[in-house]
Image 1 (cartoon, rainbow, N blue to C red):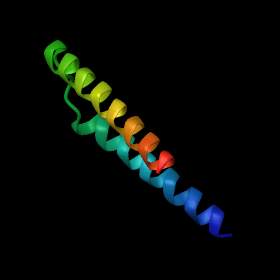
Image 2: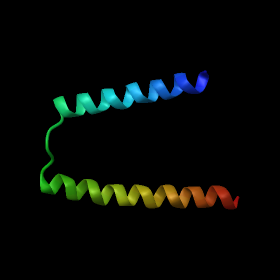
Image 3: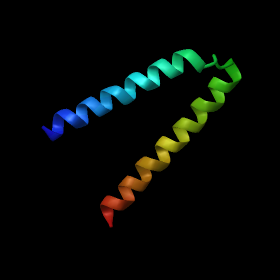
Image 4: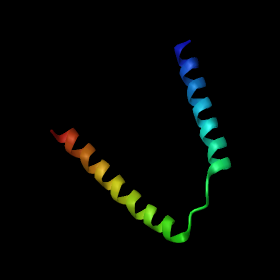
Length: 57
């Protein structure tokens, strides 16, 4: 029963994010997309490196 409640909560949260994103979201310019893409790759690399260090120690 707990699993069904958790799944329902996740579904409601995702549906709410989609509805609010469609209503209030603004399109990003090409420069903003490029900057966000670079930042995302750096963050992913740092998170992978941190996970590797955590596993080693």
